[in-house]
Structures are given as C-alpha cells and as structure tokens.
Length: 154
Image (cartoon, rainbow, N blue to C red; front, side, top):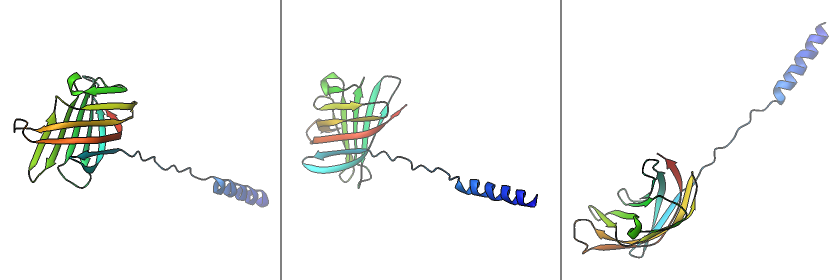
C-alpha cells in the first residue's frame, strides 16, 4: 500500500511540475505624430479621442522635448477622406516662445485620414496658423504633418 501511495504522490508531483503558467506580454501600441513648423522638424507623442456625442475626432500631440508645445486637430464626422478648414476641420499649434502662444487656422489647411478604425487613426495634415490675438500678422506654417495614433472613445 505504501508503494501505491508513493507512486501516486510521484505521479502527482510529475503532473504538477509539468504544468506551466502561461504568460503573455502585453502589446504596446506606439503612437506617432510628426510635423515641420516653419521648416523645423518636430516629434510629438500623439493620441486621438472620438467623441460619441457630436461625432468629432480630436487628434492631439505633445512635443517630446518641450513642456508646452502642442498640436490639436478637430475633424467633424471623421471617415477616410480629406477635410479642410472650409468644411469644418480646425487646426491649432501652441508653442512656448518664451511664453505660450497659440496659432490657429479655421480658414486654411487640410487633414487627410488614410486609415480609421475604432482603435486607431492615421493620416497627414498641413495648415498655416495665425497668432491668436495678433489679428493674423504673425503666422506659423505647418507642413509634412503625419500621425498614426491610438483612438479612445469618449
């Protein structure tokens, strides 16, 4: 009987040691947003929010090495298409120079959404932003803007 118990115990230990815990590594989704401001290349950490109320998509970025430099693009009723300021897209760039200054465009610029899903949006953009508060006398030209960012519903 002792032999049977020892054999049963040995088999149990063997079976337990053969079971391995399955570990999975979480997938890290990279988000990129880059652009040129008056010809100078900038890299931003990007994200997007899809607002269920109102149907707007907000694409935004925070410059990697600058605390207050941001870019903001608002697209009404997003889909794979090109949107312009004339049909409701809005563009804004904020930079620290040395104080924070905002440059917005509701008259020029375009954003092209090349890919859109519930979890991701990608595309290109450009615009000329006028300094808010200086009646358009100072501008920033944003070119070669690209984004590929995760989308969060809100």
